[in-house]
Amino acid sequence: MSNETVYQIVTDKIISHLESGVAPWRQPWRASDQGPRNLDGHRYRGINVLLLIMESMSEGYQSPYWLTFNQARAKGGSVKKGEKSTVIVFWKKIMVKEKNEATGKIEKKIIPMLRYYRVFNLDQCEGVKLPRKVLEDQLADKQEHDHDPIAEAEAIVNGYKDSPKITRRGARAFYVPSTDKITVPPMKAYERREEFYSTLFHEMAHSTGHESRLDRFTGKNGAFGSHDYGREELVAEMTSAFLAAEAGIEITIPNSAAYLSSWIKTIKEDVRAVVVAAGAAQRAADLIMNRTYEYKEEQEQDQEMALAS
Image (cartoon, rainbow, N blue to C red; front, side, top):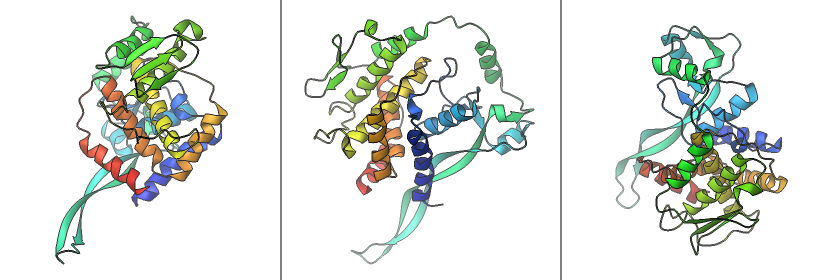
């Protein structure tokens, strides 16, 4: 299956949620889950987080764990009859031969290809022998947590190294690149504290685009509803969702029809937009949380896709 076909599968799924009035990255995660992962405990990244979260929301899955059909069998279990799989994607390097127009010689070149495979939620399986870590997590889910999830959110905010100045006042939330400052209304202005952190995470995400950090901005301010504006808003919204999942807080915020319209327009204009934005959002979240991850190749691939659009 070609890259474009895989992009289309992902994009169609995102658009179907947006057109029903739901932004998938603005839906709640269960506090104890902290994002989807495989049975080895490795967390999914980028677009796969959204694909699995959307499926969990649609089907009511409670487990954060996902595995393939063969993995279920290898663990002594099976997928329940009639259960449908969920598509996730991954990069695979392939070697191709191309003619160098300048020299006339045939040269080998390695290019990234987007591929997909199918997974099932643990709730869709039976008889699977679970690793000790999964059993411990399930036991913890049944017990009362001894930490405040809001404290976890504050830890993310305070742990952002070289953070822009954050002012908590006024009635508007915004980030100003020229002064590298974030302003958000104080927590008492929000009906739920979780909404405050969602807003703050969103503006923190924008700040990662500053030239001193990930240098994501194009140098021009896109008007509301424009392609550039829509792209950056996708990155900020997804970053906020990723950080909320890390903090273990649940966020349910009514989606503005104007924002939904802007996102749909952006995604329909560029089939690569969601995949590229999710990758950029993951890097923004990694930067805020001071996580070291070798994503240079990832970034180069996203840049190539963005330039091709």
